[in-house]
Length: 121
Image 1 (cartoon, one colour):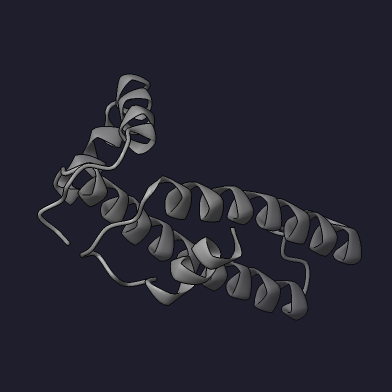
Image 2: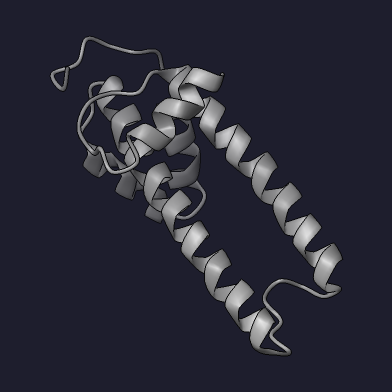
């Protein structure tokens, strides 16, 4: 689990190579849990939703949260591409998610498929 999460951050901009199932799912699960906890704590401390801006401090907090969200999004995007490579598919398959409902379900299925011998190794 910890090694998978370390590899997630180490390969944040690596769009080549592969990521096996555990290297995909552990960072996804950990990021959702950590994100929820951090947002809840921040909202408790400031006393209002993180997107509401009432003063300069809220503005800075909002900007920092958007930067962090972008960095995590970039890492997740590269992780999804590497996971697709591990199932012997092109990273362009990530675009299947654009199709409402069916695309999301199909992409989930692609993420749970076992590893195959990959041309990206």
